[in-house]
Amino acid sequence: MKEVKCDCGHVNPFGTKICEVCGSILDNKEDKKLIDMRYEGSARRSQTYNKTVIDKIWNFFSSVKVGVTLIVLALVASAIGTIFPQEMYIPSTLTPAEHYESEYGKLGKLYYELGFHNLYSSWWYLIIIAMLGISLLIASIDRFFPLYRSLKKQGVTRHDGFMKRQRVSGVTKLNGQDVNMEEVKESLHKQHYHVREENGNILAEKGRFSRWGPYVNHIGLIIFLIGALLRSVPGMYIDKVLWLREGETKEIPGTHGEYYLKNNEFKLEVYDKENEEDEQFSAAIDKSGTIAKTFEAYVTLFERRKEVLPGEKVELDKIKDFKIKVNEPLKHDHFAYYQVDYKLDELSTMSFHLIDKKTKEKFGNMTVDLNNPQKTYQLNKGYSVELMSYFPDFEFDEDGKPITISKVPNNPAFIFKMKTPDKPNGEISFVAIKETVEPVGENTYKLAFAGVETKDVTGLTVRKDLTLWILFTGGIIFMIGVIQGSYWNHRRIWIKRNESEIMIAGHTNKNWHGLKKDITKAIESTPLCEPTDLLEEEKSSNKGEVLNG
Image (cartoon, rainbow, N blue to C red; front, side, top):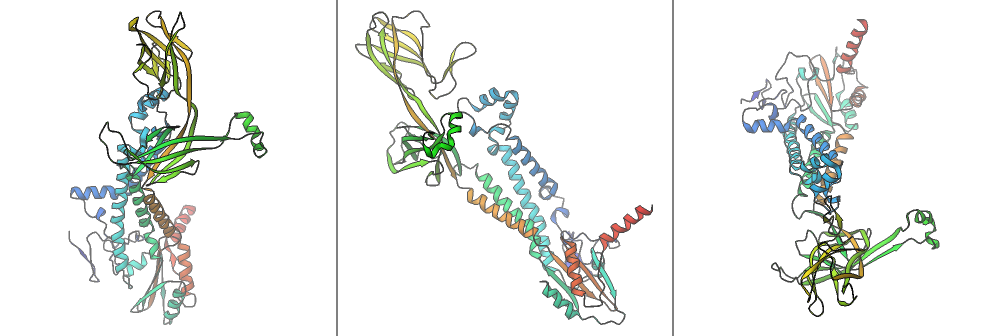
């Protein structure tokens, strides 16, 4: 496409509406409307080229309507994502699909199928965020560089048509009067304007940097969105829950087996209304019972010595001991472990005696680890017990069949097969707390409850966030752009001397009242007439016509 040559000799890019140097109107020269100065009439690619596929993609993403639509979609999706809890906050007793359907019905099922249960990692939400970032980037490039080029090349002497079609514009007939332009320049300097002069004409300008505020905003938002997208990259962001029983050592989630944590001891301190220091909590204690004052876990952090093959024993090296308290996390290698919850007296083991129901003779004792039960338990004199089924959190379903609603041993139940010398094929018994059922007929032997052990459990949140500094940087840059564009404005004053008159025009991106005050102050000691706000004059004229009508 051909470039556009102005009468002043400057060659402008195709699509330019106002000459970059002299301000001459390159299209609609006879139009008397005010000039649209948003982008200085510069040639923007999105409004110039529309032939190739790249042009159409560029024009699509550079559209403000598209950007606003993407923002609205992201906000609506984020709002819907708060209707039900996110997957990380639901109990682990059921699969997410089962949980949302059982808790919230068909709406919950649809919520899960559309990916709202894990919104910020769902593919379609990430696509919206990525498209929003692309839109911000392309819209900024499409507008910033033409605007920057136009402001950098702008000349001091502007075309008469440019001066007359500014919102603030006026003409003073000299009639032989002398105007001391040095006084005008001095006044403008005192008002912190940068003044340029050419052939007796003046361009006074200040606050140009405020024009870049929106683009600084965009840079901050793009950086922020990059940080948000990086959270879906494995290893960049981890937020997991780790439950550790006393004496238990577990692999830390998200570390790929590199780190392990052992819970040596858990301690809970509660408020005591008999204690003078805790008297203020007496009413709350009477109402709620026990109120935690502080709880802490004494842990040991281990590191895997070397990588192992599946089935090999993991060798660990101790890193350090630590006491994790509320708001006092253990931190190591970008990971932080926060004390957030606890559970007291969780069932750990259950012991049984195998006895003859008639004689009450005992044939051995067996202890079942409720978190890691064995398949077979060998007793005395050829007696043994086989664990056929285990239900950690037992209840009956609608058909009367035993099921478990979680993996936590809150209400354990077992189906045992008891093998004895006189019953080599075994007898089957269903054993639960305070309940024993013989489903295939009366048995000769039974498992009698012998005792239980409990352990306290600490609940830790495991967090790793390598994107935090990116989000923080994006937020700071965004706020700089907000301040830059909100508290300053770009003001320009043109003064042009013709043979028998002096023209004054002014433009600002906001606060026109302030611009007019600056002009008035600059020319108050001269015979120059104060320019008129043409937009306000037009509004007053239209209002007068309506009233007269």
